[in-house]
Length: 379
Image (cartoon, rainbow, N blue to C red; front, top):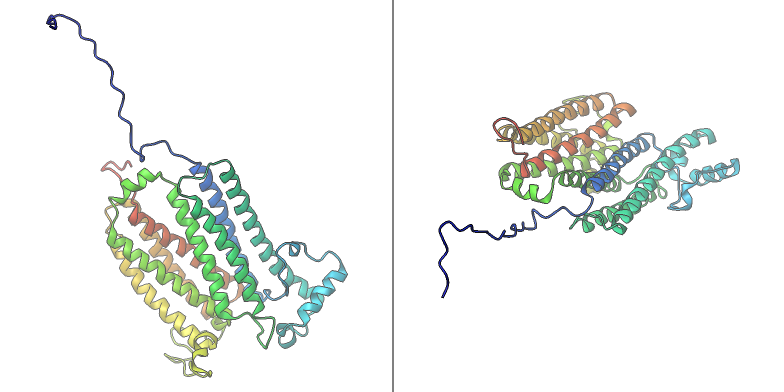
């Protein structure tokens, strides 16, 4: 029989253990901040690679190195004999025989250094990726669930190197004085895809997975869908721009908004067979690039108008920046064409595409994972 407690008796409560949080609240594993810094370094290097690649194309330097030696090719010619040997190999190419037959050894050295720098930068990117990935993996500091994504970046980088040589090899035989335009488009398109993935990963690593799950509840599905469409549309235009660059189509028709005084160029289908006009005819290739540019501008306005109605200030700002850059890029493209695509303007137009691409990706990210702010403006 239990004894009754006095109402004045002091009762001592046993402390209960604090409830454990779920996986979202668990301490973060991996060095998200350090991995993010590493990816930012890769992002800068890939941007530089696109710029150097553009200069290589605009200076017709891409065929100056006629062999693919991923390891031993890192060393440039170190003696006059080696320089003469490289020049002799270049003299056997159609580009030299049909276009640059008066080129001297000294002029050859100038284009050689552009292509060598392009390939060397590719080796640096591969080395930075390999050292960073191996270091984080061995230290077991890769964030949970990120190993496959980061390994995939390395695989895409290796594929890019192989496609680069596949592109260059197309201009070393036959009667072509430059690389095949469709191969150039694939090469540039993959570079933009890699850059876009890195940008997305940098944004994702800027917040914890728990924060992303919470932010996604406030995401705007329709705006995310529209921005995804804009991203794909911009990617198509980038590929078409590569086709234009591949055959120097931007230097053939320098009036705007007409082309050679016509709304639709009369020689747009002058090549035979018919399908080759879509890749090799400067008139049709530039016309398609212009037409898609107009359609992209119209769709971009629709997306911007929707984005500026977002409930989240950071998202609105992101779409405003993307819309502004789209307008700048259109004007830059028109100016580039009307000046027959000189080196400076051609490079500026290509790098403008890089900036626009990244801003669209950032706006898309914020439409899915908005930064939620209170009425007072705090996060």
